[in-house]
Image (cartoon, rainbow, N blue to C red; front, side, top):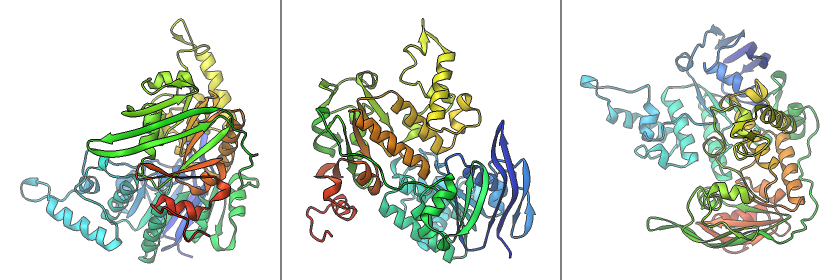
Length: 508
């Protein structure tokens, strides 16, 4: 049988860590091939080797039956290999068009850039694949899902035939995921070969033809997706059976630990948040459901102090924190798992050990007489690495930037949960995590609730909101439009309110 992509006996080491251990991946032309594994299993490393970001220590790569050397992304582009990374590689201050043509610019007389020609070519690509983007907008001003489309168009502009998607749905809403799936199926129908790195088993079942599973850097096997089950895929991935249900007893709420009164936010003349009122009691998880872009990010930014509160009142544990700084809020008992882990959650050029004490480094036992106590910092870090199964190349000394997205997320969760905050803001807490890690984090959140703490959960995964929440608030157009409980609603009904419906008509 002929394969478009063959990665044979690939081994890649980072110090003492063997990220890929004698891995073989074979992909057929025109198929959608999923690459599945836990966080740190070696999936992104393997695809980074195929795209030329890393060079394998051992093994060979064949494209269309011919052995090739892929030393850098330019070599990959020449072989018509493209990759959409989990963390997008875009320049915020450039326009969409400038990002797409970057490095592939057309020029005219006197070496001036030929924007007119580029605009026409990119517009034709967008039309062909039904990828609607505003080419003249700056990347910093467009949504995450639109940024992903820019990355896809950038790949197509380089005439890629082998398309690699690294966690493509991690930051998308259900509607956006459905749209992306249609686009990917269209690519396969057009004869392109697709490799998707994903943790989402239901999506793999929905879209993939075959699936290769890695575990701790080693090949477990390759299966025909139609011939297996989600449960079997999960077991192959983590090495044991997984529970897909969140085990939790009924909430026993106490007094309100978070109270939000008449909160509004304006950007110029536009009202972003409108008269937000709610409370979260100790011993309960309140979930916010909503389509991305309806004010959830702005609400959390105001509550945590990332954005100044313009109107309204915020109370933590009977203390008015409306005008208090982020530092003061942390000292009163706030915890924050941010939506953007790299921008607001981590200092990427610090080692993991320092990232695990970002809110506590001025306190004992981590500091004494203004001198950091490295032994205490190291011991604290090692304890959290083991408890939360954070996988790294050099444990506490690992540069955080070099860690996989899923393990960066685990580091933030480990840091925030270990501080035992009274009021925890958990925004997309399981984004980019494998099913085993999701199960563990859900358990930790429920245990945190059961200790009497308040949790405000924001998730674009409706199932996660339904499974974890004791009460649910739906946000639409900057307002809370509906309050319910998981027992009294369904994903369908929540979807109606999330898209602006105001009644229960048509609910099953």
